[in-house]
Structure formats: C-alpha cells, structure tokens
Length: 110
Image (cartoon, rainbow, N blue to C red; front, side):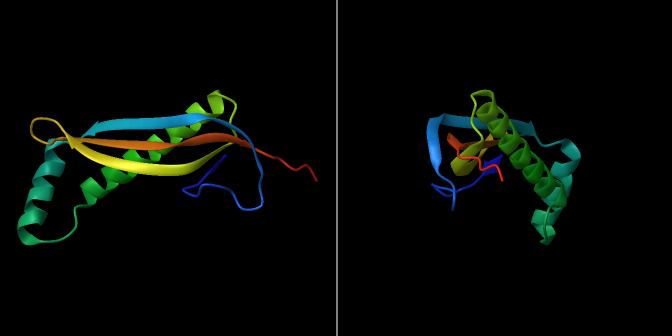
C-alpha cells in the first residue's frame, strides 16, 4: 500500500476517494525511561528510550491507519498527517495519531 503525505501520487490516477482513516496509539512511558530521561534532561543529551517509544508508536499508528484503509477497499492513503500529544495527569502517556484519505488508485498490469 502506498502511504504518502502528498495530495496525489505521481503517475497514478485516483479512481475513488473512500474516506478519512485514522490510526491511534496511546502508550505509557515506563518508570525506568522516566528516570533516564530526567538525568538526560539535567545533564543534556538525547533520551534513546523516549525516542524508541516515539518511533514505535508512530509506526504502529501508521500500520493501524493502513489496515483501516485496506478494510474499506483502499489501496493507498494520501495526505497523511502525524500528530503527537502528551496525556495523563503526570504527562506519562503519549498519543500518536496518523490520519489520511483512503483512496483507490489505478493498478497497471504489465
């Protein structure tokens, strides 16, 4: 499945616009990552634990969006946008949302 931030796909004709599809992931950051991030915040540097959590959440949100697009008969998602939010009383939860327009594009058989 083609997934792109562009409003169209170069060289492909959009045959049908299905609907907007979403993929949402809410994940908690564990206690040990919080300690490591706190130390890095104090001393400087990057937090690999948080970065890994962010990457995993983003990839899962995109996979979920793709799955929902496929379920309604789409073979591509265009205009994809990724949003990030911090949730929870102590900001201990991360929400990643992927959204885009599910479409059917022409498929050429050679």
